[in-house]
Image (cartoon, rainbow, N blue to C red; front, side, top):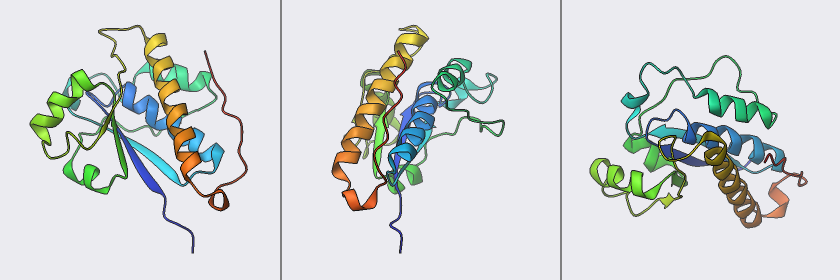
Length: 164
């Protein structure tokens, strides 16, 4: 019987840009590495992304540059729910200064149980810088998870394709 995959949930404000990029990028890297982890992404205030489309063109362009194509069936942003937190094995919020207060307001019992990164949104950093930080952190996370997973449960390691 195959082991069930584990879930990481990437969280940002609108679920339109940072968390979406991280989810797709993580899934591509985890698949290449043969890890039994899958990512999804959610937002804490998805209404802020209303009318902008399903996903940031910056995220799509960077994913394409990494050889990751999301296809035409891309979903619209999804609001974080208690069930997402309950069923996740790992939760990562993009920026502590931005997302901890939102977590404390919406899901106070979870605010101290998630991992916070420091990845700026477009109001604080240009897309190249932000998405480079996303890539770095996701690649680091995949390496950590690969090191924790028994060798017998993963395929042969494949090199990560890093993009500047």
